[in-house]
Image (cartoon, rainbow, N blue to C red; front, side):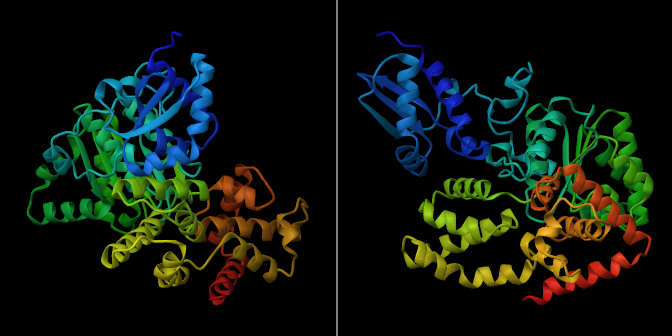
Length: 463
């Protein structure tokens, strides 16, 4: 019996798979896989490594069989998996990266192109490993991810500047540099710097009388990427120079992307005119990854390092580390180092032994969880937890509830949607309003500031 072209069959499989799993898992497992061959009712699928092969065999073979039969009308005797690098001519046209599927430019943007000359990346200040291909998308970062692609599609237009903020180790630098790599592929002039480097370059330029050289470096680019802008706080000369640099680039419709550990309005000792400009374009936050995304991130890291781990080990790590991606990778590196040194394969019991001290150290650094914060607020105001998360609008409950939202935001960098869910399934705009309200109360020097300090101390004292 005739059947559709193999590429069409694979597109159908991709479409069905995307409906049945998270975006993070879908991208992790399917992006570099493809139909390699189909003969005598035997379907052969190419996968990038043994880890992906094992996942397909254990998790998705049955689904592929059903989809294949549905699309072709043929029955499959067997599915085989071979470790193969996907040829360029079979690169998926499926949209893994988030641009609008109706966007005419998507193929040009999403196409996986050869890596540019390393000297270009080095000159731009980019790290080769921070690309969109290695970035895992989840609910916690999908807005920021989509905004990055919007800026790439139309640089210097709607999302200019693009301001991305979130806690330490959540992927801000990864996204920032991924934009740089994509723009380099379009032959744009790109420059990535930390705010510290910008400051040092400015100070050196002033000291050596090389102001024009400094300006030619920073103001003659198509894309300026500035990481950790919050470290410019209190540096008046640097802020003034950055203001002029920003304005010149913006007037020339050159794209600017900035990251910070806090939103523009929460930045201290930064000029108001800069804060205003940071909000001209798009402000997107990155929260903490959920369990499913943490698992996908670990699986992706294992693939990159060619070090497969048992799913129970992955689950254990992801369950016990929920603050940031750096900690996930740190735990994984510790396991790999131990196992390579001792020439062993990690099972769950060995993993627990390896990570025991690691988790203690993390616990000491991360003193708060949503539950502990809510309990601390409830205890401080002599309330039941159900009253904090409930629907009552009594004044004696509204303020503690808003404080809880503020602490969830400032202590563990929870996203606004996540805060809303923790507080009885409220809308994210309610959480945003609460945080703004409490920030205003703190600035006004009200008693709420003292309450928050005491609650924060009570959370810390648990340890």
